Length: 239
Image 1: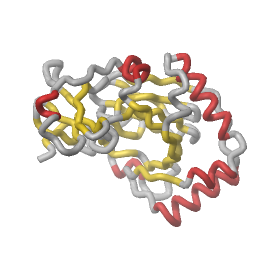
Image 2: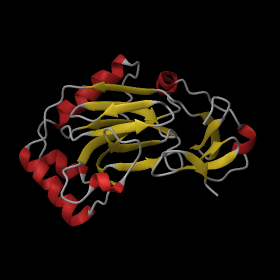
Image 3: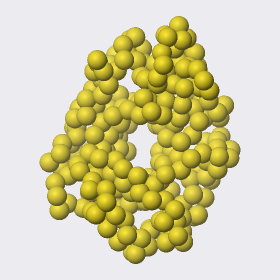
Image 4: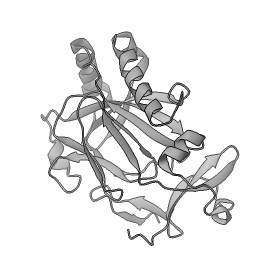
């Protein structure tokens, strides 16, 4: 994608579809958060192996309510992220945002603008260092995943979780028997919130004529609906 290419997210805003720019800003910091207790880690492993059946590249939700009951330091994790977001000029946005607990065994390159175009993601990784990076091929960011890695990014920006030292997502990097599962908390920050939009430098209503003709959320590149190659992260036509 060159600087002349135009990337636009069309997202649901109330009963209408609205357009906006896609930010290449990725805010990241390593926060000091305690490790989840051993019994909670064991519970997650059982859930992953018996219920989620995670395959390489999969990203799936874990039961958060049950985890919180066994996670005495959960509030400390939330507080650490909340304190960080305040330093970014995002007061109280975390407290009013939906939160989920996720697990991934790597992650194929994708964008989330077709389901979450009205949001930015704020993720806190709580697993230990396992030689994996969160990679944004077009935004130009590659962030090592360690316990406490926190990131905020535009859902329309392609991203994946890949093996450190690799140039793309390869199923072989996540073979059975390898300890390469990452757990993370994720919040949906409303992109129309003034503070969120300012932090990511979002411009709204960049293509209202197209938005008025659409019935569902999508990301468009130079006027065409776009998808992401799961192995390379390159943009391609969704048709």
